[in-house]
Amino acid sequence: MSLREYLLILLTGTCAASIGWCVVLVSVNPFTAGMFGFFAFYLTLFFTVTGLGSTLGTLIRSRKVEAHDEAGVLRVLVRSLRQGTFLGLIVVAGCIALASKLFSPALFFCAFFVIGAVEFVLLLWEERHVERVLRRG
Image (cartoon, rainbow, N blue to C red; front, side, top):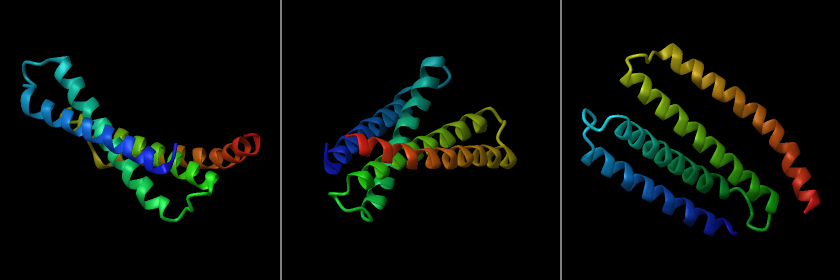
């Protein structure tokens, strides 16, 4: 799959998630919907933010990589998707904490630090793994 095809699929999914989030936002009453409304709101928000972050990250990073550089394109895709997912987790967790009146700047920075540490470890692991995969195939 080419980078362009990947971006098109990712953008289509992001648009679908955004439309779904808007539908939930407009049509679901949070006081009567119960757990369904809760899960629908946060799940569609998570997919919207993850898709948007992944798409923007891929677009920004792909300018630095040549199209025929398979390893570079793979790194861009993996990093963008992973960091978009982390962004979605932080946004949804922050929204849930705000709604529960548990949000504090210290908690936010702790979560941000933990996710940053996980990302650092994954970047180190990725460097070894991508090279090994490309040598095999």
